[in-house]
Length: 353
Ligand code: SAH
Ligand code: SF4
Image 1 (tube, protein in one colour):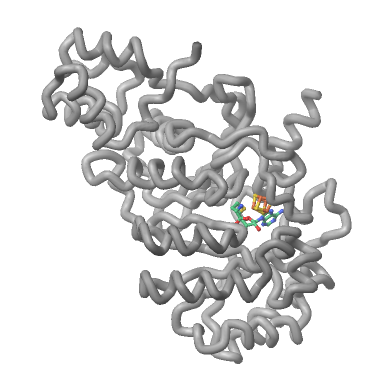
Image 2 (cartoon, helix red, strand yellow):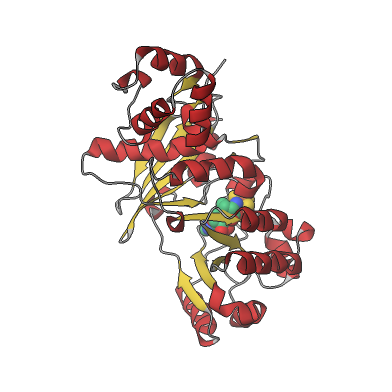
């Protein structure tokens, strides 16, 4: 049987687990530091942890459950990793370089059941959720890659925007967030972490209640139900009114800004009038909302969609700005290496099947 990843345990759970087996609290701190500060490749590398404890960990946990299948490095410094899970499934993780630091985009599920009509990840139905350990290990793998390069670079930001719907894997997502935020471990600040959801309203409310302090982005992509349902079938079950109600709840509870993601699809949702409709929908939430316009990365299987022209992107941006909406355009990374969400994986699967 495969052992579970040690990276899936929160610091609290690790201390509990060792405590149940007669180890002191300080032992848990040493193990945690070995994992996240020294970043050892094997339990035996934790020189300050005694042999008995090392054996116990080795018997129950794996320190490596992901193996690198392929890695593509872009001219702009973006690195896209394709990892093989213990069960043979492939997932992708992307390292991006920005002026403000290094961010990693993680995958949360094998495939995605939301099935948005423009998305490569949605082409493959979800076969399973990733464990918290499999999500956290993606960050560790990228950090170890940076460590090997020897420049002292550190992952500073995380975006939960890879394959999958994070709120459809809610408990593991929360554990993952606790693990990467832990001040004695990777210590990634909550404001440096963004979770993106296709808009599961109930979970947005729960996230507001449990508030892990991270940023939330909601994939809106259209300001009215007719258009949104065409693009995202989830809108049938959770229409815009219900989504906005959950967003209001979130804004009220957390008092933090939210990002609305908006993919620009040529002649589908990129007209000026639609920008005005979007501004109207945002209404007096303006001070708490930032719209992030995403230039579409064409996907072979979804040939009905093309990227908006630069002119249309600028017009849409200007129209929102004029309406007093805070708006940004997502910078693209690694366009030469199939950077769109799910693309590398689906290509690899096609090539090997
Ligand atoms: N399932 C979540 C998170 C993963 S997708 C969600 O949908 O929000 C992360 C973001 O990438 C979403 O805003 C999604 O709409 C966008 N995306 C998906 N496919 C894309 C593509 N081909 N080009 C550009 N953005 C894409
Ligand atoms: Fe799933 Fe997000 Fe892709 Fe939609 S855009 S299919 S929710 S990964």
